[in-house]
Image (cartoon, rainbow, N blue to C red):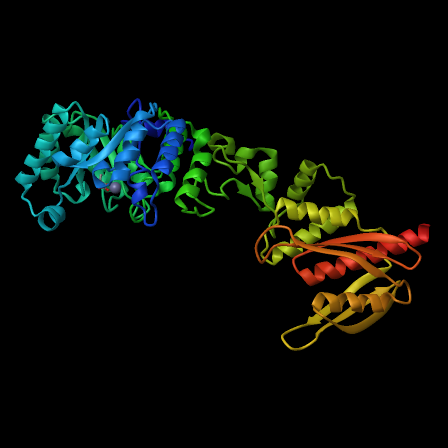
Length: 511
Ligand code: KIV
Ligand code: ZN
């Protein structure tokens, strides 16, 4: 279910019958600041990428280190389905390193822009063409398939770029790659550039776009619309500076929105993204398209209501398509439908009155900006279910004072069967002081002993809900448990104790 005019719009495009995904997570991705993978890690990544179904895996840059050589050779020997490519400058020793790894696909590059020619390489236009042509011929003579990148192509004069690409095409290059090395393309310049090159070049065109302006995926899609049949991508978009074209975003857009033919198994995207996130230690923002933690999570009442009626109302694609999961989160925007659906999924039955209490608690906690997890909700419901019908004691107010070198003091106000009572007590800490205050307030009604007290944060984090469990008894040997879940540890403890006393009084009355 896509943009209604997609079929009409697609007629103007030149999308090739098959789009190859050239994954460079292990090369450009590894150039992301702070990422350095061991040989063993590189092997595991290559296996994951192969399972995902990418067409080519760029394993690294063998000429730079022994480790790079070892990983390139070992990955090449694994017999994966993907083609294994390695990067090389236009130098015999770089190309030899690829040959020594027993690989058959070389990705050669040389800078072509005025900045690269004049400052980095200090070579003329002709010298650069000659060196590139010689390198292609050398690689071809050694039986390699050659893909060639004009580094900084997007800042190279168009006439010279065409001359350069034609020269290496004539020398036997198999694929021409167009790097937007510093990510300065825009949709309009990407279209113009690839359209112009497509008219001049007769071998497959590939794209290698960086994401400095956040446009790498959009520009790559436009390049494909103009006939490029291969895109360089990285998992999670990692790479130099702002990274490269993000594989997950590109693949889903091309496959789903454009109906393009790609080998990648989209159902493995979420898992692969998580794997790369943990092995590289680069965490993704929760709203990262396709694979972010929140992209199939619904919170607002209106959206959840729609999702429960038909998931497509607020989802562009079903989460299973990318191996993700739908989540209904609870917070201040939550509606009754969300809570009901959660309770159904937990198989927990509550009365209407209990449901309203649970709903009020979710709203109160949500208003404080806290997101309520499934575990939090279960705890709130179980507390509600264990709360007795007759409330002898009601909490009306609580105030605590604590600090360094002063005694913790708690003031508690309750109503006991309609009578309002208040007292202050000191204790070793604010919880101890509060429980002492409650005990003293209920003393005339029941003399309780606190036999057990457990406090837990349900989920991690300083804003986690606190769950308290208590066991109380009286002189006559009656025992009762109480529990409570609140965003505040002291309140959670006080409510749990009051719940247990109410239960104890109910038990006494009925025994
Ligand atoms: O961004 C770039 O130009 C590159 C080349 C080596 C292709 O990564
Ligand atoms: Zn790059």
